[in-house]
Image (cartoon, rainbow, N blue to C red; front, side, top):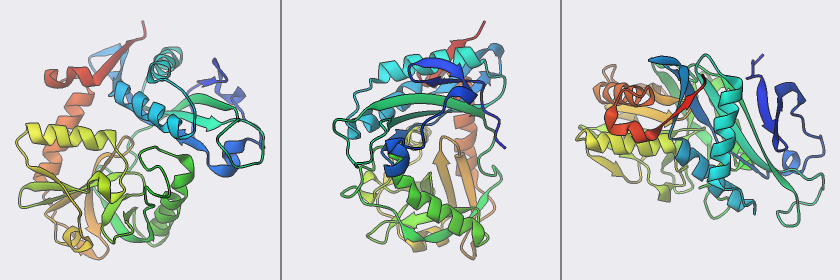
Length: 304
């Protein structure tokens, strides 16, 4: 059973987590008319009275944009203010995950986004490694990533994650750790909740936004960091066969961070992953506020 942070933000106030409850008739519960964000926080390794949040502004802006798809005007500044106060009230002492969520909070039954109440809540929980940092196995899912013409894939719309859920369970129940979804064009899209990178011949490849991938913030960070380190990063369509003969493959996301892939289907990938490891070390240094070049990516929250 999960242990949650003791305080949640619910219906415009901070309350004990146990009191943050919604009705079984809540509109978003029935129609998937919600959108969520996710961000990690860690106690500052150099100062236990400080909490470090990674790219808070970008996470808040993405959630604000997601809310727009639901016809909900919620500013990034408001989200950021709530999250900072949420952290101060909870005073977490270990690595944790924040889940902000916007949703249609009305109790009506008609699927719609107009003339309906919306709301916003935040809760969190301690979180270590989401996937094994030593590497995972993946299968190619029989489920396909949705298309932007049928779902607003540039938002983290909750209803869209039924596909991720089906793919993840299919993978785990067939003996793998994670799923890789193809898009409707038969090209590699992403994992169940992570972006994917492929390394061949010292170059880094990742599907572009035209491949129906989420605009991942960790993805963007890796591309920026890799290019500054001198690597060539190419955004283009990727075929399934490229995964099977890659030098390195890794997944990226807020929860997953950088997770190396050891095996895809029955194909083992090389054990040595020098580029993946270099990027992991760099990203860890950035998130721990040990890299002066990326200080502006870190929000420092004083608890004392």
